[in-house]
Length: 160
Length: 390
Image 1 (tube, rainbow over the protein chains, first blue to last red):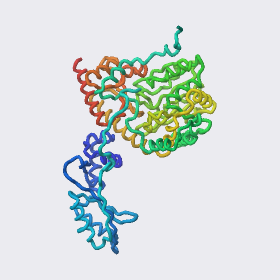
Image 2 (cartoon, one colour):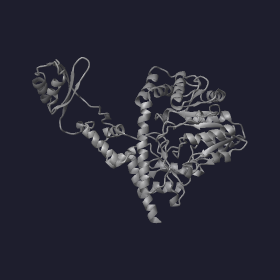
Image 3 (cartoon, rainbow over the protein chains, first blue to last red):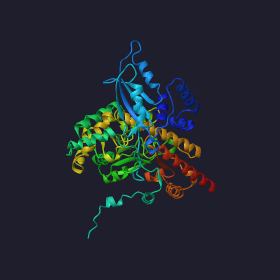
């Protein structure tokens, strides 16, 4: 049942409790209990809103940075990752397989803000060996949702 | 000049609700819950295979019975999902939709005078296809109180010594009814006893809700040799426009069906066949996702009907609900017309699917929840207004 709840609210976290219970064929109390339990267990980590910032006048710049680091004895990559993810402008940090170690996603207001972060805060970390910064030019699809898409029902109005 | 027309075709009565369709189709601002096809797009990986086959220049006829690879995948699917075993070479035919399979199965199996039992309400093409095949359609009227299942007594009552074929339209369009294992067992027994053949239209087989998945009547003892199983890609994989279905059954019958198919059709569309291979190989997850989504909408509609006090048995198949509108003292067509006029909401009168559909309307839930919500709000208003007038 948990998986059904999660699959649903992953796409629509604003659904009302009563409605969610009807759709999943569960009682309201059960759904509420499950949700609370999953929040407490850290399975549900937050309820965010997917925004197409391109449609809003506020300037935003997103960058993806590949970071190569030297892992530390006993702590692996965790401590350097922590030093990086604590910066509020850092959106996400992943440990990667392949040609580099950490993938850092960053959001800034201006190009300067992002480059300052990379050159002054990220590259200067002791265990960081190298960085490669890529700027995002356009978002087509985010969190499973295609942006800039209009749904048109092209079916005939009636069919038997 | 002589009459250019065949009397047989002229005598087939046109759908009684043609006028309703024409008027509903003209009103562009109408919300429709009238379609009999999925609202999902064909999964991208399936479309991509179709495109790839075109890029590769695979634009020729396939063999009459269909691509061998596709027939093999069909047999694998029927084996893993329904526990049915068919030979891809001699017992499987790829057709232009399930509809072609219905037509040629009837033509391959009936002679003039043979009776074909058709439970109604059901899909509209069985009766005319039986007539075109020269057979005599005999209608069995399914009942709301039986949740529109075919009851053994009804079948026994309808069987004569001329009865040759029983059409099994489950999961059912328009009622959403399904036949459980115990229900089918009794029907199968009668078919064996009375030496009836069965054309089992299982096009909605993947769309059943609740605990029990679809069971094919061909899987009961003594039934494989007397059943043509018809299925296709339209409903399960949201592939209506690709026009692809199939029939499986005993070699002797499939051989004759293939002959008709060969002369009338040649082969099913090649692009669609390549796409369908991909659907069967890697499409289980898509089917599961769509089924879950339909089920949520079904739950929503049942709750909405309960709130507005509209009587409706809970259907466990296809993507239709079939609420009863007898309390308003109107024909289903009059109800549908009034609803269209007053609330710009189109539903299909139950009478379109046979006389026993009178007093009901078919509501399709192959629509987004958002649209269903708007539609149910309108329906609730309409129902309330009718009751207030009384």
